Length: 153
Image (tube, rainbow, N blue to C red; front, side, top):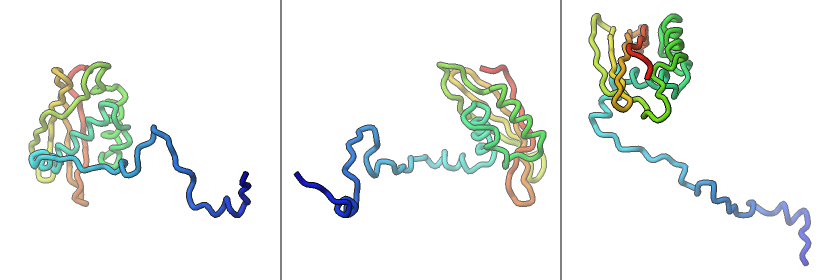
């Protein structure tokens, strides 16, 4: 029978090997970049699509309303977004697929202003989302108005 002294115990450099099967193996936690086709990459760079995707995340309950705070201009606009999110206007009921931005178009009524509308699809159901973007002095787009058309799912 061997008795380990305190000095021998502290001389170990690593704990005994783990045999926990619920944990991922070392190195598997790294994310691999997913393939995006060029059309999808170009779409993601457009301001109106970028905002449509993020507004949908908030209105469908996937993200909190505060996540968009720095991208909103004016307290009334943020309050409207928060109100729509609290109503759950784009939150799908159980069994319905997660909503996606099917199409998003824009028009420019003035320089540095975009009025955009998005068609949101969840299965065979469609809803409309309208919003206005204005470019500030810092050259960043901010949402200055947001509205939803159609009944909840």
